[in-house]
Length: 402
Ligand SMILES: *Cc1c(COP(=O)(O)O)cnc(C)c1O
Image 1 (cartoon, rainbow, N blue to C red):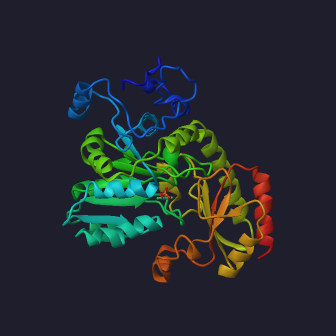
Image 2 (cartoon, protein in one colour):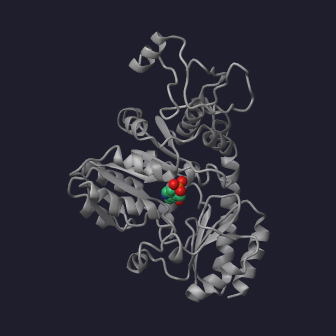
Image 3 (cartoon, rainbow, N blue to C red):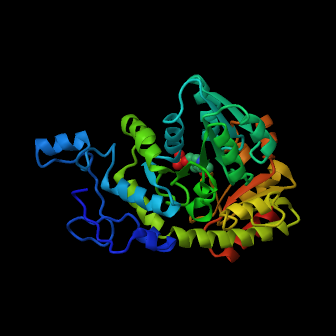
């Protein structure tokens, strides 16, 4: 790009993740600023009509318009691609814009989609309600049941969508096995990797074709902005995804991209600290009489513990638990918390707690909740960066109110 010069003297492939999170993708302007500059501009100017012509013809690389790309979104895309180990990335205004673009750019009427039932609410709506309107056939399977995947993928399919660990029950999907079945059926595999973060799980290494993120969660991780990302092979990103994004306009604002770049600088530190806190709190909760059950992937009592640890480097930042006393107990415990806030967001530096049955999973209905194991006693805890002793004391206060 003509307006920015890179000063990196070290090749990205020689750097380790913590260094890539700070330096990856940085391009400095002519002012040699330390921190990435913010390019709050909708458009760009050309030296001449000839340069504009060459840019649109594709023979010169020059920014054209921030709906297509902007120095801040490019820097973020490069940093995300380096940390994921993906060939290419495009960022979007929200995580849902990323999921929507990844699916709609690839699919057409007559195609078939197979998805894990345990999906983020809006992803579930896209698969169950939106895609069928466009003549796309969709089918849900229980993500942990390989027999159901095998059956569903014994017929041709165009795309598989799954989330692992899932929200909120932290169910694990066998990425390698499902990718193999999907590829035999002719499908690409799209993995929503929000819960694992790009640091704890690399779906591409297990055969996935596309990874999507809500950058709103751990990547910002400080509750400030919405953002999304789609990562995959360069050919697919440039030829299939990019035209869809360019022409439908789910562009991320340069300012949000800049905040997400700042978020990435501390991502490894934050995820590591939150995982450490989450593991401690999962053990604490499991020992409480009011708690009937705890789900946390790195605990030996997680139903898919072995698979989880084969795919993930740590248990993650979310802990799900079930109170024996159902909804009244869950509400009493949540209302008695002082430090941990009631909020449906996750992956934040602040610890947050939510009651999925009455919030994030209200709209899927009682029957579907029952299938997913989301009982009225289930509480999802997104663990933040506070001192774990303060978090433990707060949970003890909550449970005492039950
Ligand atoms: C939050 C979330 C999304 C949607 O992201 P937004 O940034 O809110 O649009 C998608 N999938 C999962 C797993 C999420 O947690």
